[in-house]
Length: 98
Image 1: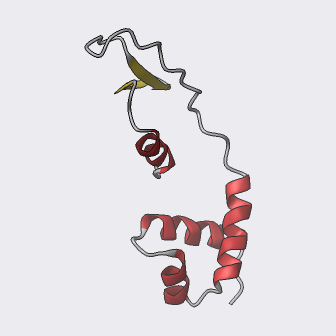
Image 2 (image 1 turned 60 degrees about the vertical axis):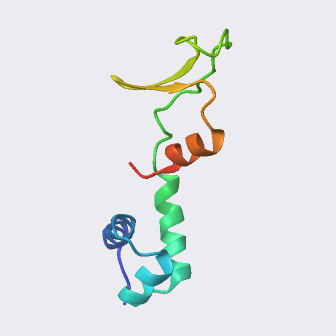
């Protein structure tokens, strides 16, 4: 079965909201995985860049200094983190779906 652009977009969003891997989702929907990845890559090319800005950690003065933290801002929201937050954890947070 051929899918149009809107149908592919709906399938991509459905997979993202499901608990299924792409392979399992495609098997359920009887879709070839390579076609799903192709259309997903085309969809991802059209998504605007993240609204996050680069955060530069402040210089750390002392371990008990409350100003030694990172602040991430997006629109009117703010997220305050300790300056020594794990970079692996922070990367996984930023990669998590919205």
